[in-house]
Amino acid sequence: MTSAPPVNDVSHLPLIRTDDSGRLEVFGHRADLAPGLGVEGRRAAMGAHLRLVLASYDAVLEVVATRVDEVEDGLLDEQTRSFQPLHAALRDVSLLQRCLRRVGRYVAEHDALETPSAVRPATSSVTSAEAARWADLSERAGMLRASLRDALTIHAAVETERQNDELRRLSEASLALGRETRDVSRLGVRRAEESKTISSWAAILFAPTLIGTVYGMNFEHMPELGWAAGYPLAVGAMLSMGVGLWLIFRRKGWL
Image (cartoon, rainbow, N blue to C red; front, side, top):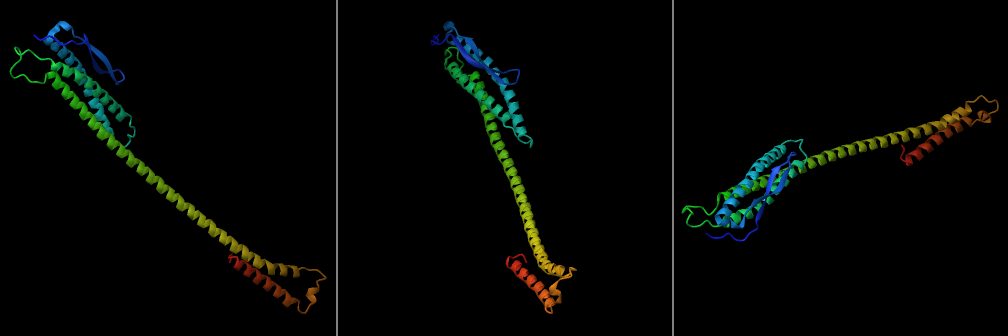
């Protein structure tokens, strides 16, 4: 019987499980590998150790797979905008893969131990059952990671589309506000022009009214009332002031 190569007396493997809050918890699991076990004994002890550890990964993978399904279903919900479940699932899968890589080195060491040719079946496979199970778990974890990577891409695309829709709504609201502001400005300008026109005509009409009001007073001494040219002068003054004011306001653009 070939003697076992010198190794550490205690082997540590990461065992994984879910805690009460649902988060993944990793702790070391020990397998006593005494130096005197020999190749067959060491291989059997390592195999039992691997089966125990890989069983925990199988159970946890089912839990993580359910979380990944929930993340994928959440992508179809228009109310779901949080990346937190997706990030949590990615964290769990990454932790699983890191631990599986450590277990893989242990699997390789296990398979490297040769079974004596006298007891080895002629049809024995090079790959042990533990190695096949580890490969299956690693493949499942890789598929979950690929699903989450696709989900992350889809989630980012959905969020981008939502942001674009929000920007479009804001742009439309801004354009509508701009149109309302322009309409209000045009209305203000139009009212200002109307106010100028009304003020101009009020000033033009005020001049003859002022002259007529002065000469309509009942004072005893108003010399202009006795002038032969008093009436033509009064009418001329009214017309002159009215025309003069009209020309001034016309030049300023008020009329």
